[in-house]
Length: 156
Image (tube, rainbow, N blue to C red; front, side, top):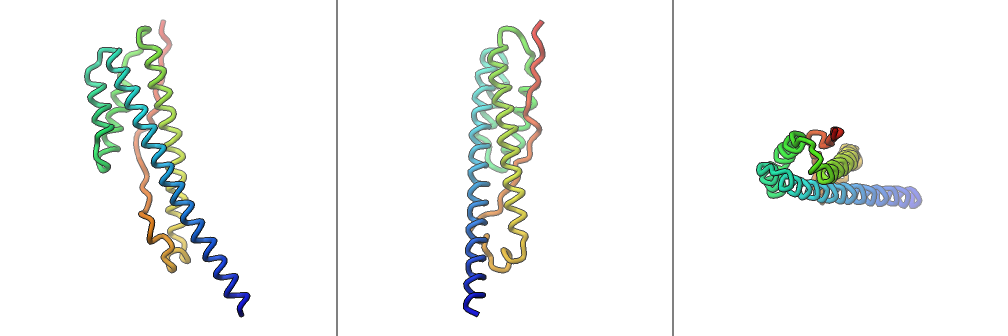
């Protein structure tokens, strides 16, 4: 009987640790995604200034300063604005920087989405719900934006 109680207690403790680690990883992925979005916005500001596109820095600054509930919409606006930038030889290096930043956003968003999916899946398990092992963690949210990758046309 004591062995069974010890085994169950060990399993519950291990599961609680796993829940905590998974939520911590999801929070870290959200922070990494936020940092990638800020770096992309900074690249967009520089690109807009070099390309002489005054709307691009405004859109990028709006994405940085947007409230949490408006952030996805602001980031989608920035993605559309970046896609509309014409590739010219004068800004090719800055455009490559913005494109690389956009690829990093796409990668960070994928990692974040995977961890949010895993955290949400573990929250639905019966033992986790019955023992309320997630009560100290807010439910992670997906960050749903358009694919932020940019295609750079060849300058000819």
